[in-house]
Length: 213
Image (cartoon, rainbow, N blue to C red; front, side, top):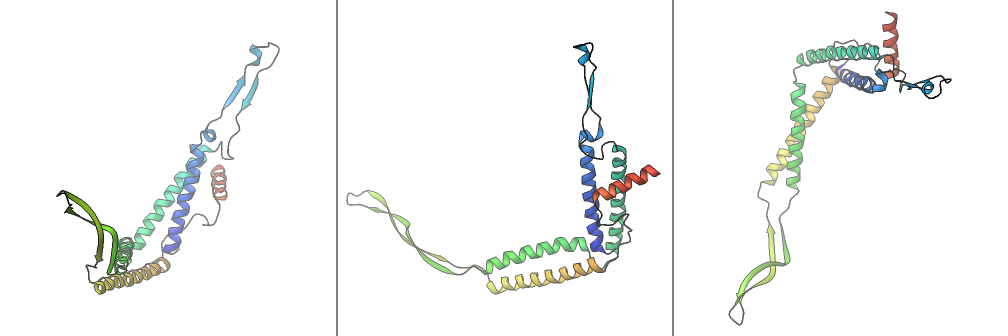
């Protein structure tokens, strides 16, 4: 399988483990609860009644097999991780580093593009100014007045725009290289089941094989 499918299968294994873990985390799947209604203590000629709680899933009673299934999935994840690691090491491109760096390039480019959208401006703010003066009685009092606010960009717009363009171009170039790696890089791993198989089919098949063995 190629690297892209390997990552997909990695997510598949993780999802299967989550579902199997949920089965074992539900106490009702791993214990049997039997309640005996002691009717004979009240009426000697009456038989006691035994009620067993219904299990929430079809996998109740198969806790050992589900636990073994989880161990098997974990082993597959370990094998797949090693295979992916080996495939990555054979590349000229450091995929993990470049993915993080590309995210940073895109974030910086966005910051720079936002800067270039700013414009010089001037506006009048009614009542936005203030001062003090002496009134007719000689007392100092405050007063309000209009204010003119001038906003001037304090950077080289062309230089910042050039940085944003360079970062975007570099990010696009690296993204294309990463996409090629995902599609063209082979991972030496043989999946134990089809990626499109359902959880029920995979676990049932595992239990069936375990029972047969």
